[in-house]
Image 1 (cartoon, rainbow, N blue to C red):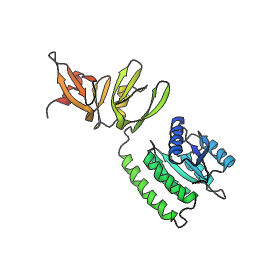
Image 2: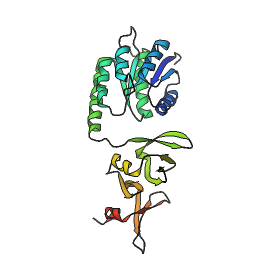
Image 3: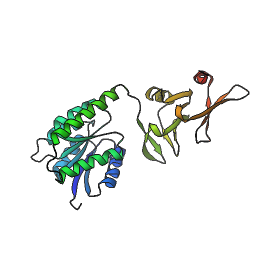
Image 4: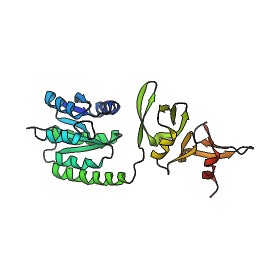
Length: 262
């Protein structure tokens, strides 16, 4: 595929812009990302300057939000195709009134982005001139309605922003094994890495799914499925051993009732 397509990325989170750019470069090497915007006003300026065929547009941005940007883009003689980015935002359904061709949920998964790229390539490069865009948008609309309704029943954390070696990372909670407080920070442990966040364990407890994560100490929360065994020493102290790990976590008396035989 030799034709170069221009695109703009608009998201107020620098780390998410960088992640999307990296994944796009991997799945669509022919795409030229000509600009990145941190807000709606900057996104409109970049579109005026570069006339991209595609805009990846975050819905929730400071100032002019993504929905208003898309409304203004619709007034162009040749508006770009818009792909909305959302973190389970129920207002995303309005996207399809504004000629959005697709949407991506945060954190963005490469397999889902590949489907979006295939759709865009057919449209922008006119590889499928008979594509029924209206029916396609209707199908995506129904999919998004289902997604947002399911999300409305659960506001639990799906991912967190954490630091490691002075770099920011997006860590999916499905990869986290446990959290443990360490002075002013909370350590985030996965199978392969340890990150730091400033959120206190108490605050995390209220945001995590209680069916997935259990608090076992004033300074520790563990993912239930990672528990290998629970042991008690001769002094009555209770400890948890994790699967595929040498880490041992203490259980305070307050939370020992979680592990009584049922």
